[in-house]
Amino acid sequence: MNRERLRDFTPARVALGRTGDSLPTRELLDFQLAHARARDAVHAQLDVPGLRLDWKARGIDSIVVHSAARDRATYLRRPDLGRILNEDSRASLTARHGERDAVYVVADGLSALAVERHAGPLLELLLPRFSGPVVLVEQGRVAIGKAFGAPLVVVLIGERPGLSAPDSLGVYLTWHPRDGLTDADRNCISNIRAEGLSYAAAAHKLLFLITEARRRKLSGVTLKEEAGLLE
Image 1 (cartoon, rainbow, N blue to C red):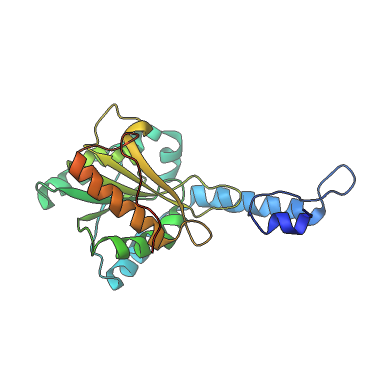
Image 2: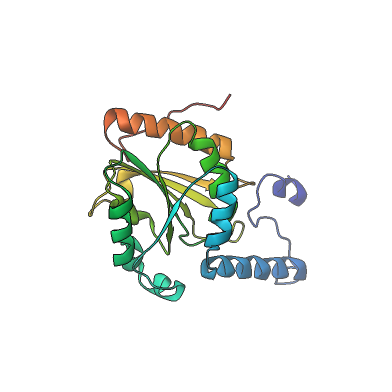
């Protein structure tokens, strides 16, 4: 199979060719551009007002809270602070919400770009089928789900950027999130973006997991994603 055909099947950097002992100049420049985009995505600040306006136009109401990481630099240096809410946010949630069966948590994670592009369209498909409050968390990580006191928490979060995808959205579903859980206790749907998993396919898989998690009262490796193909 020649170089051009290989690259038809994947965005990965395969069959790049060579010039002497090095990469061709075009491929080297493409790599540097992708690396710069990934770094920019990690450091980018979430546009909360713009995002909420977009969601409002889609009929999605939300509240905004903040983790204990006061800014982006602190968030990147102190992962532990991204897993808890600050005092004002804890008080706000207590005042505005009582008991709830499920919560959608949207966190910027390591790619605010992913959340700005993909969270709204995905929520637009999910909420009519399974409703719940939507909480937007600035400087949040996956484990912050335990702060919301719901039996089921679905976290939509910007994934760590790669060299082929600075805007990949991930979804983590956890039954009774609490301290001490690991990734084995969560279900993950990854690579939600235009060039990856479609919004419709992601919603299809996630709604299956939500239904089964509530029925069986569990999540993680014991809950298999068997939604089948989207028709």
